[in-house]
Length: 121
Image 1 (cartoon, rainbow, N blue to C red):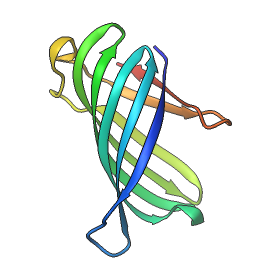
Image 2 (image 1 turned 90 degrees about the horizontal axis):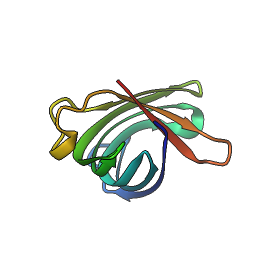
Image 3 (image 1 turned 120 degrees about the horizontal axis):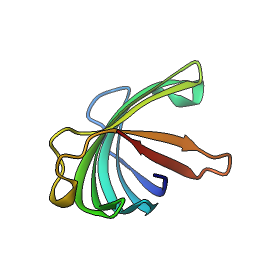
């Protein structure tokens, strides 16, 4: 299963020194069709290659023809420019045909900036 998304990230007011806060929306195409929105909290200095973030995202649409909503969680870090990402379906969060959905999302970013995602069991 392969999908792509386009993201719009909007800065929001951060409540703590040294942190960032963002809201985002995504438009999905491919095997995952729909929209999602969420919030992200970050810390560190990504320009220097060291940072981390957590996000929660609500997807509304279809995944491989199954319609409903589901929540994704993300925890990402970058140390000395090397990224690491844990991107998963939140257990028990699915509705409709997506009830019971589990798995991880594998994200790859092409050199042109295209975000490609595969959902794995």
